[in-house]
Amino acid sequence: MNYHVLTLFPDMVMQGMNTSIIGRAMEKGLLGLEAVDIREFSKNKHKKVDDYPYGGGAGLVMQAEPVYLAYESIAAGMEKKPRVIYMTPQGQVFNQKLAVELAKEEELIFLCGHYEGIDERVLEEIVTDNVSIGDYVLTGGELAAMVMIDAISRHVPGVLNNEESAQFDSFHDNLLEYPQYSRPEEWRGKRVPEVLLSGHHGKVDEWRRQQSLKRTLERRPDLLEGAKLDKKDEEFLRGLKK
Image (cartoon, rainbow, N blue to C red):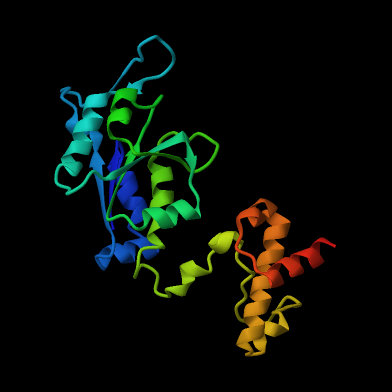
């Protein structure tokens, strides 16, 4: 998987992604990341990439040409038109399902806006996906792009040491993850549930499934509508609701 981030702040992106699991995956060659500085494609001697909006209004708008030239510098060498994700609060809300879908791509381009946004004409020309990480506004798209890259990368083969890790994350099967415990067995009077100490894998799996169902019902009941439930799950939930 190769990520390409079109941005006014390339250092912010590279410094933010060069650590932890993502950084190690990049070192192993499992992930590629480049941050392309849109200012480098400005024809203005001061590297200016924004101007006042037509029709008036507050703020500045990023101009179409530098953005397009930055995009073209990447896309020109690709065999097919890549997916270009524009980080915008007006887009579809990012979720686990979309992360899994995007992890199947070989190349992804993220476009990070600033100021009052980007000239609509270039967005119409190059953007394939408008995506938001939540119903709020950030000063720029870089943080949102990094959030998406982190979430997507977890589903790229080899990135996680334990291939089962992503399989049991929250939102797998549209359920929240079960509670986790580590040593010691007792901490400040609170003990690890006995079933986790039993060594009985079947009972452990059943307990974890039930805890996922319970936690989802308590914290995110809206997710249950799209969850993959069998008769045993449904019976357990009915018992909880009673």
